[in-house]
Amino acid sequence: MSGMTEVSSLTGRLLVAAPALADPNFDRAVVLLLDHDDEGSLGVILNRPTPVVVEDILESWAALAGEPGVVFQGGPVALDSALGVAVIPGDEGPLGWRRVYGAIGLVDLEAPPELLGGALGSLRIFAGYAGWGPGQLEDELQDGAWYVVESEPGDVSSPRPESLWRSVLRRQRNELAMFATYPDDPSMN
Image (tube, rainbow, N blue to C red; front, side, top):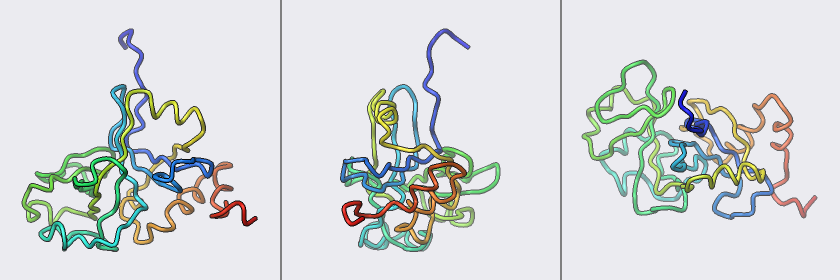
């Protein structure tokens, strides 16, 4: 190891918004971190389906998109750009796919879908992403805005994204599981 201090990478982990997180962009968000190092962090919100069907914006990829076959809002940054995230089991991924963590990787949406079609376990299309500058995410973690938990390959393609926040918390083996029962509107308690 060199003398440089290194940020312990959270790439491939989930950020689960704490109930107290005030930013409406991230209310009850479950973010898959695709990149995390000392230059900042980038991820996509897994539980924000939009009414836009994949076929309307990326027709050639529509057949490969998992249920629900809609575009997800990946975050508040660059909403006019699309990111493809796919789960591909095994050691070697096809051309047009770059492994990020475990079986999870990014799809080159410029590549012909036929290159990946046979290998794709599931594909999600995200408009935009969530980004943090150097040290910004660490500050938010220190403030208790996010819980960091392990991701499971099924999280990316959850057919019920609206229940992902609760189900990710519920499977934790510690006090975080209690937050799964947190009311949607605490003032109604």
